Amino acid sequence: MSVFSNNLRFLRDKRSLSQQSVANELAISRVRYSKYENGVSEPPIGLLVKIAKYFHVSIDLLVSVDICKYPVEDMLKLPDNRIVLPVAVDDLGNDTIEIIPQKASMGYLEGYSDVGYIESLQRIALPFLTNGKYRAFPADGDSMPPFRNGSYIVGKYVEGIDELKPGKTYVFITLNDGITYKRFKERKGNSICVSADNSFYEPYDIPSEEIVEIWQYASGIFPEDFEPGDYDNYNFKEMFRELKQDIKQLDKKMSGRRKS
Image 1 (cartoon, rainbow, N blue to C red):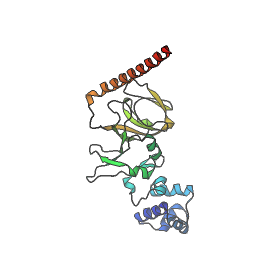
Image 2 (cartoon, one colour):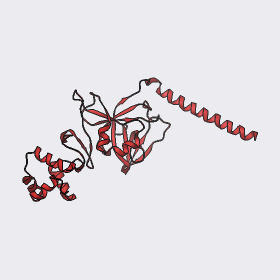
Image 3 (cartoon, rainbow, N blue to C red):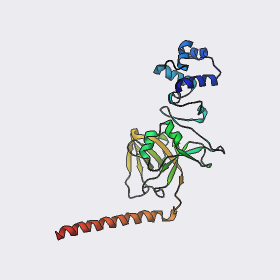
Image 4 (tube, one colour):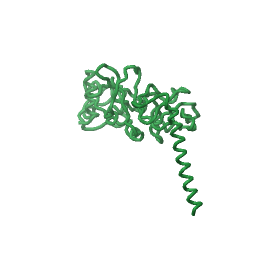
């Protein structure tokens, strides 16, 4: 028996339907339909689409997720037959938020559509975040104060580019950069322009076809030693310290060449 055949049987039983009645709706014989439920054969793609529409379930769910374990009503479907699985809750009934591990940009890019990967992630609950699907992503670098390494950006899932608002910040999941957190400036034809809050970095464009997911900033999680008032100074101190080190190394090289 396959995941697909088990799901067919579960969905039919849930509606208290007979095999014959489902077969009639699909315009096939009961014998043919029973073969799908018993795992003897699999439907062609055209019929698979028809079955998915009949049960109001995406093809991705039908063929890859044990719906008995994760009820359909508790799953959040995304475009292109993908899902954010599951919309789980804690003991108090609060939606839980998956935490993407630090230094896992490319790992998430490979696993964002993998049910097993999403299910394996650690979770937290933030009761003040409701009415949406949220996920926590690791911050990287110093381009978006006050977030730095060790911080997490909690984002709310955005359906598409048309929902982006100028001046708002978002976590963009892209094919080239993986996880990146930037401020949306404007849309430019088939791309969007984003910028960092640290003026040291120049704005740049992201082609629309490279964008996999978008999550709007909702909250932040900071390390224990975080001091909000010192962050800007910290960035510039680090920058100048590194610049001084580079100058010293350059001076040493130049001095060595003069002596030789």
